[in-house]
Image (cartoon, rainbow, N blue to C red):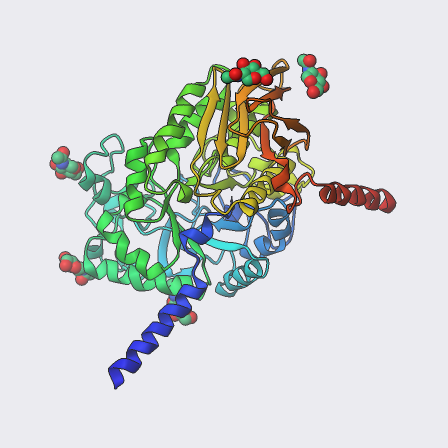
Length: 514
Ligand SMILES: *[C@@H]1O[C@H](CO)[C@@H](O)[C@H](O)[C@H]1NC(C)=O
Ligand SMILES: *[C@@H]1O[C@H](CO)[C@@H](O)[C@H](O)[C@H]1NC(C)=O
Ligand SMILES: *[C@@H]1O[C@H](CO)[C@@H](O)[C@H](O)[C@H]1NC(C)=O
Ligand SMILES: *[C@@H]1O[C@H](CO)[C@@H](O)[C@H](O)[C@H]1NC(C)=O
Ligand SMILES: *[C@@H]1O[C@H](CO)[C@@H](O)[C@H](O)[C@H]1NC(C)=O
């Protein structure tokens, strides 16, 4: 019975793919550190090599460099990284800069040699997996790139889409008219210096190439998840076949502040970046006049997304201004990071956010892509410690409660400058008064039972709720507060006597070494 044996071979192939691939459910409990490969770490380990963000040329980061600096990422508590696209790119330095970011591909069957070799990517995956970390790779399906006017594109130089008939004819995309789906999906991104020829993803001779390519990419490099660039610029009908062939979780970019619009794409891919939350978040924490009410409203609105636990929640990325360029106050930075990591979704922290980078020269793209090595990989930085504590807090909640990630966050109190929210048993209080704010207390209707002992996970201070469950939260210097029932922390290494002992012994060890 040959058909049966074919069937069983197919079945075992499918099973082995499933065993390797990480689904959305596997990703929910992870936190992702976003790496711009060219700007994270060099093979020579330099912490001084200059990087001129304004010119936009390659600065020398590599896949081997990432391997060498994984302690820096893992010791902050991250268990996944997202790296730049790996495909071969447009050569040379244009007036728009070079293709160091990876969004200007010319051949998807070759890797970007500026970053190393295919075996370096495989080594990176192996190193990540040996640390129980996930590997997410950025991919671009929507477009290729060309240096020169749109009517001068030599399609024969592209691989494998080496014919004009694979591409839509030129028109400039108009982002002010997203209601015209046809032009969003078929017109070209980029500009007339580097136009981005737009693939006919709706025709079978294009989609079938992508479908087999993504299966190969995922298996060649043991990829656990994908970040999908320019998701809404591709026809929605393309994604189900692609997603099936990928077999892993994916997180797509839909640059829009409307939650219904953004989350609508969860009908096609498991995850999207939570741009709907991003805008009110940035506004709320930027200054005391930022609207906390709008942020609270978005916590409500986002609940109707198909799956809030699979959204990618972020407050910085390579396309948005550094938060510190909007307001450099350290307490505000701590609040927005606490909100990012403890609200719904999979937290994504952009490299350099933990070093309080400001994007010197302008704050926005391309200045927000500083070389991380210039920080000296400082693990004593205030925000590095803060992110580490928040990762530990989130892990403690997940360990104590396997419904934590899928339990939706709710606001339980807010006023003009403060917001308290509860997700599972975690109560987070954030404020935008900043580090010069006065000291005060807030009576929060915590939802905890009367006389519950809780621990503040950033200071390890303890509190007890009142006889009606109110938590009287002391705010000082505008710092965020994160509470969890003390009794539920016993199995964790957060604020327990064993973790204090651990810190003390580390202190003694350091003292002894000096
Ligand atoms: C791919 O298919 C489309 C529509 O079926 C066709 O117009 C186009 O010429 C084909 N492309 C190539 C390169 O053959
Ligand atoms: C949508 O945009 C395309 C391309 O610019 C244009 O040809 C078409 O007329 C537009 N459709 C509508 C309904 O505006
Ligand atoms: C996967 O590896 C095979 C064998 O080395 C190679 O032919 C193919 O181009 C690779 N595909 C991708 C997408 O990396
Ligand atoms: C609960 O107790 C606090 C003091 O512990 C008090 O300020 C508050 O008014 C009480 N709330 C209710 C609803 O009784
Ligand atoms: C606020 O409280 C902190 C300690 O909790 C103290 O160090 C600081 O001086 C106080 N600030 C003001 C303005 O009273």
